Length: 140
Image 1 (tube, one colour):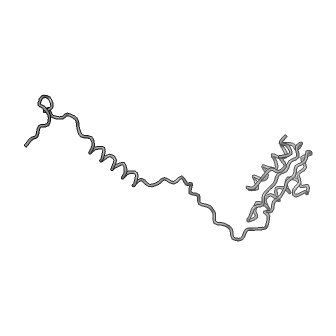
Image 2 (image 1 turned 90 degrees about the vertical axis):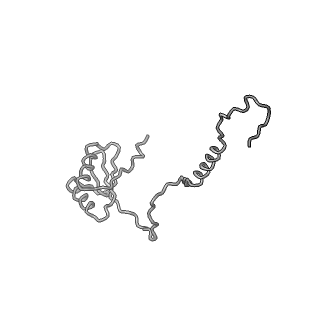
Image 3 (image 1 turned 180 degrees about the horizontal axis):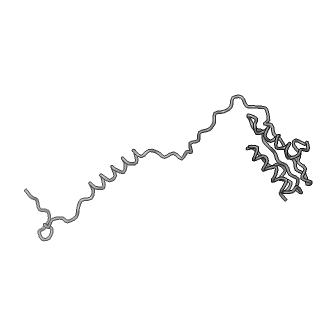
């Protein structure tokens, strides 16, 4: 049984356009499934933080200060020393279980050669914690 609507002619020719409605339906279903299954991205940086210390230490770390004046005199904790004595002090400080900080404080007019010798002796002794103090006075 066939049914003819309208009056004959070219309307009886087959339809050449494809029905895209089912394809759009499938596409929308797939899009919704992808949206549901994709995990939500978090913008967090994961860090392994150290655990809090229940017993904070009230003791300040010990330090030794080396001063160098403009005449190239070397002072170990406000006491004048020569290079061999300085070398022995540095070796003793490096041998301690917790190495104390070495603070180097040259004067503004101190010779670079004297400061270089002290730094070389500290390196030979194995000092790993060394800092310069008093440099803010020369910033300007």
